[in-house]
Image: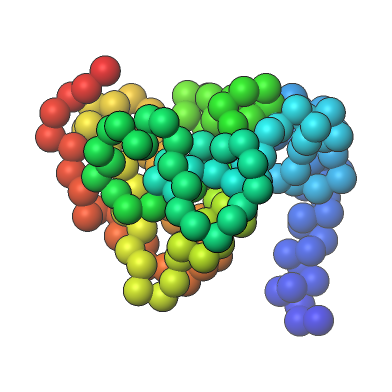
Amino acid sequence: MSGNNYAARALQTVFENVFPPQCMACNSLVAQSGGLCGQCWTDTHFVSGLNCDKCGTPLPGDEGGEDEYCDDCLTIARPWNKGRAALIYKGAGRNLILGLKHGDRTEVGKSAGKWLERAATGLLHHNVIVAPVPLHWTRFFKRRYNQSALLAESLTALTGARFVPDLLVRRKKTG
């Protein structure tokens, strides 16, 4: 082990003793940073099994190898071909998303990128471009970061897909 690696590990150990790792959802102590405690893991509803091929909504039944769509995607034209969701917006998952979006919990982006990678298995390959949904400049100024960009960057670092953070521009202030 080189001197720099040894020093970095020693500094990390000191840091973790002063600031022990906490659950990303409830702040209770956990074994390693970026994790969830047992209760929050149980209360985080990950999407698995059969889901809508357009939006990722969980569907009843078993995977049959064919494209399946939820009622909304059968009636609403989507401007994309395929989509996936990593978790359902309720319980601890909702708290994680709100923390990332409004609570300066940017560390959630790294773990969520791993969950997105699992959910998007089979969709991402070397010539896929991942572009985050942009924020209007006034919202970006207020938040200081774009949560969509954090997720996209984390996902592309894991998959090798191309991250293009400035592909889209939001010209109108919405919401």
